Length: 97
Length: 189
Image 1: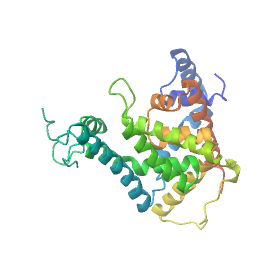
Image 2 (image 1 turned 90 degrees about the horizontal axis):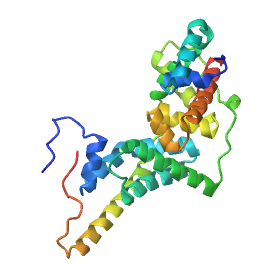
Image 3 (image 1 turned 45 degrees about the vertical axis):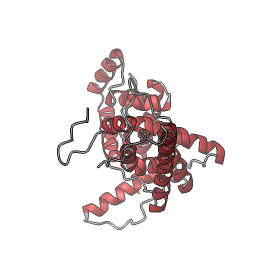
Image 4 (image 1 turned 60 degrees about the vertical axis):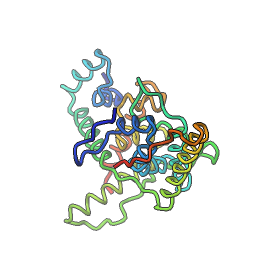
């Protein structure tokens, strides 16, 4: 394995290597401190990314999207009521936590 | 037969909520919305770079999923499926509105407050802000893979399924993204 095969280093971290590739990468890492440092840097970056906060939507946008979903649910409930002659089995009114 | 009540304080899993929704419980889908809407919006914003586009993408992703429930067996997690739908919506929206220009990583903004500080919390916030800005500057194809795998936590296999890319292609894109970040993070401010 050459030192420019970062995809194989990522493959090792992701458990996404063929058996032959894994053998080659592990053998290379035993003798290459530079690549071991790269692997550790990738591991560190992955950890930092896992905690990355993404921007959140405005309350207005969230309400608008929720209203759209509720509208679709109400349409389904109405259609179910019409289909069952008014005594239909529309979505449950039970609450969810 | 009614589903046994979860122990007090335990949140239902995505799979439990999905099962309840498909059995007719619309509120179960509403819980999934509350659980993921912000994440889907954030993902869409990172992909498209536009607030209004991200709002539309997030809304349409949930509506599309609600109107066409996924099949019950032999597939990726609900979360992976949701992000697949969101990704497809973002791609379609980008085609409709024109792709945003991807800036080069060399143009990544410096941390605005360069004054040294002993406050570890402040330093962490600055580091997080810088990391977020670096992610924004990645090429679109790299940023997408990084967001799905490392920010949203989809498994490697789910990323392949969500994007329709081969294992090797995802490996290469993730490697390029990580290498870009590694080099940028080791550059002195």
